Length: 492
Image 1 (tube, rainbow, N blue to C red):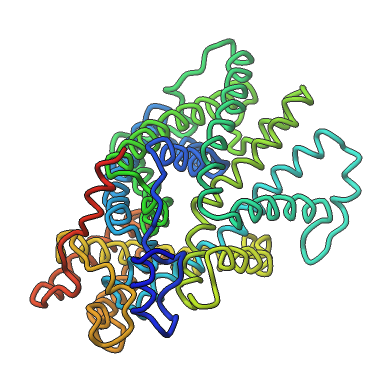
Image 2 (cartoon, one colour; image 1 turned 90 degrees about the horizontal axis):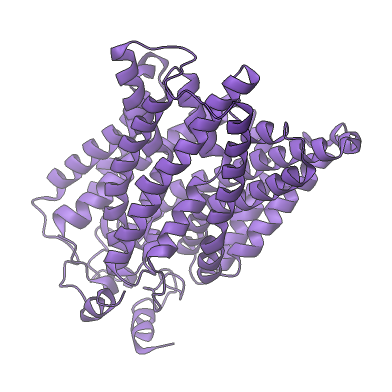
């Protein structure tokens, strides 16, 4: 334990705010490629393919889908640079970052909201990918059908086997710490590209090497097409809003601010556009080849006659699921749960608890219940815009990026982020009504036309309201940047 760590630990003798995993990052090894690889893992998955294909099914042409993706990734790129800079400058994970605006104890509000969403979606994503593997295994060996016809707790025996395989492999990565996450991301993302390009080439060949990107299954008029492009763009941003909130969990390990921006550029607008281009090309190709749009890549793979390709496809789905779940749904709750009880819960224990909870909620039952997915998880997801709006407004507008990091671990009343009994009442007072408005926009049937805009509306209203509420107050914990930060930023 170095001197800086010892001094932070001394500020929290109760053990309620500090452990080594929640402390500012001591080693910063993540390069531009590391963040590029994070985004490859987050993007190269079944969900992204289905999202892009879904825009085509709604009536957009291939070119319009690409325009929607470029607009959405442009917005996401700017937002991730803001979120990433917060983590790179302070070196702290998301739940500790939330202490700046919500207070040392109030930070558990955004942390637990994020944790619940992540744990549920971790289970659901694992289940969906395991079902894709089931489809491929049945195609490879139809004799496995007997295990598909037997079920236990709502899931077939074959389904249980595939689910537990993916569940265990993901746990193997996360429990080895963030360095293992970085090493896994470095090679996982590119692997998925190999199979996707092979599938695209196969479809191109079947289509006679001509796939019309101006094809539409439900042609839309000018105004309808424009609304579809805008809706798709903001749905894309909302899909990755979880990463906006806790991107500092990754960028706290960055060598420099420049490495984060470069990694974001190649990983978000460039990589996402390329993956979307392949996805929409394949979707249009399925219309040309099969006479209908196939929005699930597993079903496309199931039509491939080559057994070797099917096996490679099954492995791709395993790698893709581990990648997206580690990035979007596993790292955050590990830190979030550690923040609840730092003395007993480390990052690895938090990851283990998250994995067990994701199994216990039986995600196949969650996914099959529209009320749970649309109203519970959808409502919680709508809260993320206001949460990020409050945190970004506090960090950039109120404090101008200057934070006294040691006070984030100080549990006495003299601490700058103690506020009122450890909670900032102004942040809570802003969050509750703006989150309610965002949730209503996202879920109310009468507001279906504007549901995609719930996230930016929540972010802007909460950020503005918080700035106005805090403008007259003396910023708590504002301080000049730590000298060592400049040394870190000089290294790339």
